[in-house]
Amino acid sequence: MKVTIIGAGNMGRGIGTRIAAGGHDVQIVDRDPEEAKALAQELGGSAKGSGPDDPIEGEVVIFAIYYPQQQALDQYADQLEGKVVVDISNPVDVETWDSLATPPGTSSAEEMAARLSASRVVKAFNTTFSGTLVKGDVGGQQLDVFIAGDDEPAKQQVRELAESGGLNVVDAGPLKRAQQLEQAGFLHIKVQEPLGTGYGSALKVVT
Image (cartoon, rainbow, N blue to C red):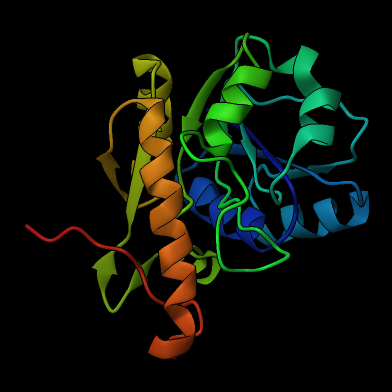
């Protein structure tokens, strides 16, 4: 599968590591082409780095950038028609760091879906931290990736990407479940200081 990751930061590295481990073609796009190329070289294999004006090559496009992503969404909207688009963000209010910035009753993923009406939006990876994705596990436990979306074939593609990279997928249901996933992601961020785990923990469903 061909996958484009928008953003060469920590989450771009973490998700890119898992996708490359699954044997997929990875294109890293960043506003700094040199950062994108450096990450692509780190990932190895067929990974390539691109600048912001280069065409999107992936059939699945993952936005690994901070909320809000409006500028990037507007820039690439035409190229994203018909594609699976993955929102990984936790829309934390950076003024207070004590709540989410999205209005009650919606989510970053739902906002993205409304903005990209011709794309198939899936929520995923917002409850996993970058370092744990690079490593691939926490305490020897397989990482859980929670996904939500209204398009079942799109969710299946995201499932295949995650599972091929060694991750366990938990289907959380329709895209509106992104509201709960983003709250869970926010909670996971907030407990890092009292836990002292340095963003090295994971949310795990045990049965």
